[in-house]
Each structure stands twice: as structure tokens, then as C-alpha cells.
Amino acid sequence: MRCPAARLCLFALPLIAAALPAHAADQPATTPARDVDITYRVAGPPGAASAEQRVRWDIGRGLERIDPPTPGLHIIVDAGHHRIASVRDAEKLAMEIDQSGVRPAGGDAAAHYTRRGSDTVAGLACGVWQADGSGAAPLLCFTDDGVLLRVAAAGQTVAEAVRVRYAPSQAADFDIPDGYRRVVREPADPGQPSGTAP
Picture 1 (cartoon, rainbow, N blue to C red):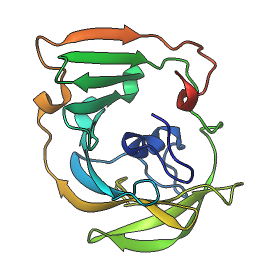
Picture 2: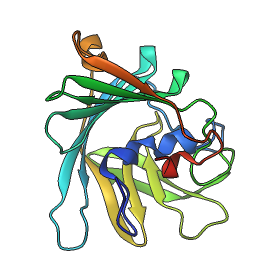
Picture 3: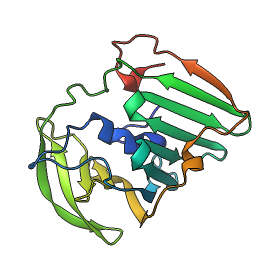
Picture 4: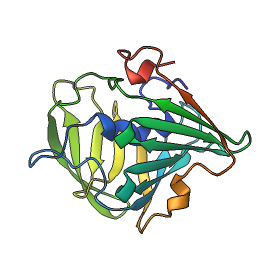
């Protein structure tokens, strides 16, 4: 899936945190501290309507589930084991991608982030952060407990949380259903940025 200029792929938005540095006193927390269910409004290409995308976190197991607007498709991200699974209900298929050794697109994961202000999104306070060294870097609004509430780029809101609910996750929502065929795909080039992997 290719993203239009100044936009981010619908299901890729919450993956931004994977390339951010670990939490420090002067840096944002970029992974939720507890289970949370977030619905984002995501901007489409110019002239197209926005869409909603749901993201859920199972913090105990280190899993993230992303439900893009495409019916019958969801993504399970297992950062601890460096795997992403694309689950397709119509085909009863789970395509698992092993990302071990694949460096994040955008370069250094240890970049420093500078706070640009504060805001309130979906009724929650968040700090606005930007990567140093690039005026074109997205502005990311994170709550103190690591929930990404908004992404803005080139003066436009790319994605913004419209509903946030803290509640214990349901384990079955993060498991590949029984009976689904599982296919594991290795990266074509371990040195290739994940954002450009085929």
C-alpha cells in the first residue's frame, strides 16, 4: 500500500511509535501503559472523505491490533517478536511478516524529540512532540501514559483520536483464529528499510 504525499498509510499510523526512542524524562512515552481501545479519524487523499480506524492494545502480551477501514482485514503487531500479521477473514489467511533485523524507515531509532507544546484531543491532555533535525517531521501528540492522540504533517491533521476507552483487552481479539492458514514471509533484504519492503 503506497501513501499519498503528506499522508501516512491508514494502518501504519500507530506504528510510528515503533521507531521512536525509549521513554526518558525529557522524551514522550510512546507505548500505552495500560490496555486501551482508540478510534482515529484518518484523513484520506485530497478530495476523499476521512475514514475511521480502530487500534487496540494488549499491554500484558505486548500486542497491538489495528482495524483499518477495509472490511474483513486487521493487523496484529507483535513488537517483542518482530512480527506483523495481516489477517484476512474472507480467505481465512494470516500473512505473517518476520521483521527481525529490518531497520525502521527514517533511520536512527535513537533520535531525540523536542516538545512543541500541549493540547487536548478527545478530552485527554497530550504533549506535542517533533523529531529534532527535521522541520518536516510529523507532530505527534502523546498522553503522559503513552497514547498517541494525533499526528499532523505539513500543517494538516493526518489522524486524530475521536474515542479513547481504557479497558482490559480481550485475548481472543489478538489471536489468529483457529483454522486460518498461516504463511510466514521473510524480508527480501534484512538491510532494507521496513517502509519500503515489498
